Length: 111
Image (tube, rainbow, N blue to C red; front, side, top):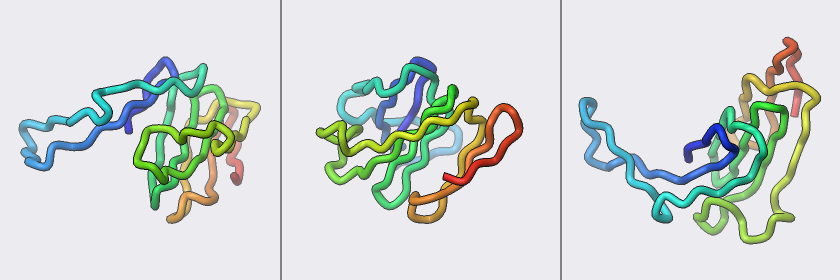
């Protein structure tokens, strides 16, 4: 997945014929962009069919990717956490269930 500065994500698949001098991506779902935040996407972590997306202004989203689509069909399946400060870094555990974020004011928060 690739995040954009306008709050959208798009799914890509790296070219299976990897060549260090010629990296190409294959757009999934015809390069369809899904807008989900009103802020820039700062990080995307995808592990074990769990997606965690952090926005630059402090919003975090988490959802299960059970249908191999960019977003779940039901928006109620997306969990949202809001930080008071901008998220500058995000690290999650192996299952994408819990982790820590770093904020623009130097705080580290457990999520």
